[in-house]
Every structure is written in structure tokens, then in C-alpha cells.
Length: 273
Ligand code: KMH
Ligand code: ZN
Image (cartoon, rainbow, N blue to C red; front, side, top):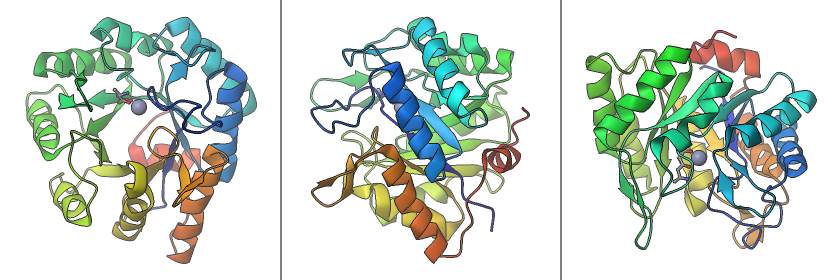
């Protein structure tokens, strides 16, 4: 079985220090959390950035500041900026981190309810627009799919030539508005992607570790981190993103799955550095 790629989603755009004090806002806090995740075994950092007061931003200057600071401490890790940003941001606002030519970036493959009155908008034309911008720059998309219909959209856009192979999916499961985080739905999602595709799974909240376990057994890859879940176990807050990653490493070791380095992750995903 391939080695296990662990992605750390260190802060997202929604979770706040009120949920867990370790959620990073400042540049220094982002470096601390990225470093802790890398040292624990993560080879990819899924990156959102915040202003110092915690407000999410897609501002390219802020991304550059954070990425440069992470690179200074953790030179080799794969940095995967979000192009999802936060609900309500415009397409071009969301796309700003591509100006930095990252190795990877997320490509959200559909619109979904996001709790209450929030809607995370990704129309077909938006997805095509984002895919074209990534293709122009040679950025590997991580296809964020919050539901089975989004896999079907990605496959249609692949047939039309907008999304290239090898395809790499991220099943984000358990969002209030997306597919559930049950094992039944995990099996449905992983059975719906092409044989030659790779996937990672991001279980939200209490689904994080059960779905990590399923992906480890299945030969998939795993995303954990404060963007998705702030608890290390029921009712106990995680001290850091590194602690969440370390738990996945322990699970993988128990099951005989080795952990991929960033270089090995690049080879598995077909990324040229
Ligand atoms: N913050 C969510 C609205 C991504 O990073 O591409 C979108 C998100 C997905 O987190
Ligand atoms: Zn994200």
C-alpha cells in the first residue's frame, strides 16, 4: 500500500480562538502550528490565513507573509493554499494566493449550504474559471468535494478538459449541508472516483478520526486539523495541530501504514517541484 499522506488544515476560515485557543491568527502562530503539524508527520499544510484579529482574508500579501515565514522554518513541506476562502468572498478575491504559484491549491467542486443562511457558492462556471487559472500556472488542484454530486461535476469537467489527470480528491464529510460522515457514505464516495485517482478524507468534528481510520485501512490519505475539528478526544481540546496529526500517525503505525514525507507525497500526487 502507498505511504500515507497526512494533510494538516491548521485553521480554516471559520473556527476561532473561542473554540480552541491554539487556532492560529498571527504569522507567528501560523508558523507554530504548521511546524507542529509537520514535525508530527504532516507532509501538506492546507492553508487559510487570518489577520491578527482572526478575520479571514485571501489577501495575497498576507498569504506571502505567512508562506515565507512557514518556509523559513519548514522549507520542504507542501503548502496548499485555499481558494475557498470564506463564504461571501468574490471569485477573484479567493484566487489571489495563486499569484504565488503554489504547488497545490484547493478547487471546490460545487455549491453547498454552510449552516444557517450561509451558502458557499461554486457554480459550474466558477469551477471552470478556477480550474483554468490553476492550469495556466501548473498548480495541482485538490478537488474538494462535499457531496457525491461534486465528484460527478469534477468528472464532467475532466471530460471537457478543464480538470487534468491524475485527479486528487478531498472528501470533506460531515459539514452541515454536505454529505454525512458515516462509513456508509465514505464507501459511496470512495467508490465513485476513478481507479487511477487518489483521495484524502477530511471528517468534520466527531467524524475526523473514524474516517481517518477508514482511509488508512482503505489505502487513501487523511486530512486533520483545527479547520475540521478542535478536539483530540471526546470533550478534550487538542493542544495543537501537531497533536491531531500525531494521533493519525499512531493509528497508521498500529495498522502498518508508513507515513509519506513531502517528497514521497509529491511522487504519489504527481507534483513536480
Ligand atoms: N471556508 C470554506 C467556506 C477550501 O479551503 O477550499 C471553504 C473551504 C474550502 O474551506
Ligand atoms: Zn479550507
